[in-house]
Image (tube, rainbow, N blue to C red; front, side):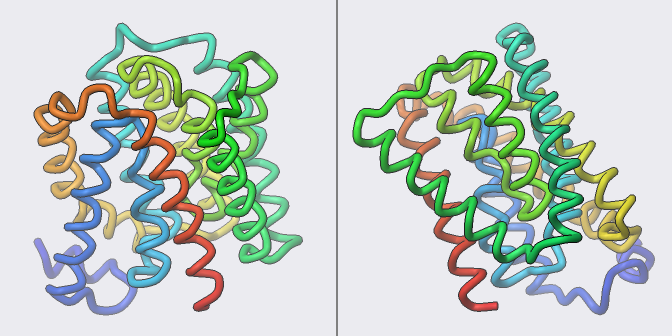
Length: 250
């Protein structure tokens, strides 16, 4: 089975590379299970530096499956109005990203959004609060769609917007938005030739690690109750800094 899957991969996937990818995926899946975000925000910067074959397609596939699990686990807490508006914005942002990726440098887009996220995190820590309404949800969706398609990490706009919501509501609502959004992003990547069976096979190899991380998130999450806001802002900042480092080093 391993040999069969390896035949679909871009080049040879060594044991240590696979274990490194798996560990990153497991940690990120656990973070997402705890806070509702964290998978792409943790993995995308690291993958960009050490495992570029994961970005963006395989991470989007795994993120889509993980988000679906998150939404299903706390389905009763889903804010469907936010899901509808956020998903519409995410789809619009994904379509815009496809155009921007053809016209502009992905690095330029990544830097612009990373700086915007860092500014928003700083203002949030300084006491600035964004009112969650239809306009802000739509704007967060558009930004998330662009960032998610270009860098695989599109959670930060929603994390900043929903940082003061109940943790269960955040996890379930963002799980729905990201499952729909990630699936659409994958379709767009396929359409523009940025994702193929090689990436799908790699996602399949890493699926057990994702399931492991998600499984251990529940007991860990209970120990971290009440600490969702620092986690959301911290992951947002980590993701933005990681993207900037990747751009500088590549």
